[in-house]
Amino acid sequence: MPYNSAHMTEQVPNVLLAGSEGGLGLSLDDVVVVFAASENFVPYLSVALQSLIEHASAERRYDIVVLTRDISPSSMITLSRQVNRDNIGIGFLDAETAIGNRKLPHYGHFRLETYFRLLAPSLLPSVRKAVYLDSDLVVLADIAELWDTDVEGYLLGATRDADTVGQVDGYDQGVGPYLKNDLGLTDPHRYFQAGVLLMNLEEFRRRTTPEQLLELATRRVWRWLDQDVLNKVADGAYVRIDMSWNLLYDWVNIRRKSIIAQAPEDFRDEYDTARENRRIIHYAGPDDRPWLYPDCDLGHVFWDYARRSPYLGTLRERLEESRVKPTSVAKRAQSALALRVGMPLFDIIFPPKSIRRKYTIGAYMRMGGSLG
Image 1 (cartoon, rainbow, N blue to C red):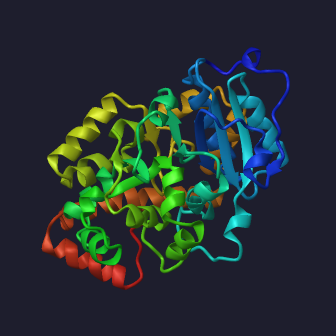
Image 2 (cartoon, one colour):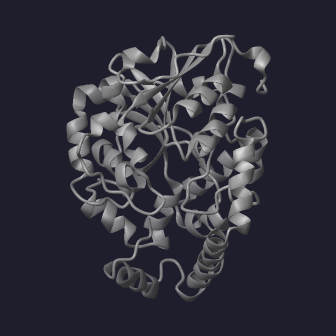
């Protein structure tokens, strides 16, 4: 249902940053959804929340837990008012304390918050399973359908990563050896995308501890950070969820025709089918995301939900600033040159699966370059 104050209960839920599960004031007895977000990412989180509540069933109870370290009290109040329904609650849980003094490596568009999902099993000790969602997505179906998936005996349910497998099979020939030799995966084709997960928190608590996960995360700078950590721990043993629940948008219009095109036929078919039957659109990528590039692939879907978000004004201001502020304009121009001109040209000169591409990318990585 569209965002409408008539559907809100009069009293806003507890909006203090909770130090433990008990301080959330949530029942946590049906569908539990976990996000991780910073103050800067709140407007995008708001759009994700708007999409989730519009597809929620009146017959289920939904409790949303936001893991954070710096979301402001005013933002917590705004988000609480946005999602508050008789059958939907939201709470904000401090995740930074659990990290302690550990220096968790991150670079590029990755942020510290990406590691918070590793802490969900210990931060929510009474919850048996939860859907974890990145904040850069929109939900187009009832998330309870995903939560109801049976993950008994497995750490998690996830979608195969068609993008990474496309890199393994020719787009970047260094990825396969990295996943097999560095990460230690038995089968790199079983690598999953961690932006949408159904986490069996009970099974995590039985098999590992947050200290072990964080130690693994700090052992080295993994190429895809905690996503690699989760893949290393699971090593292909997970419940396979249909790709429609984590449809990666066509980043700069090369993900589909250049990267996923290198993946096996069943990956390509599943991806194309998911585009027609999408349940979650995930705007995963370092750039070209809808809040700054409304014309990106499936960007109109993001803005449809943004129009009913309390942060629509903020989103419009950020978009306008990116178009007029000199530093932002320069960044956009640099990005356009590199991604929309440089990468397609590179694919022509150094075709996927070619020997010269393999050695060129390898030389670039040895000089300290990053393709993460």
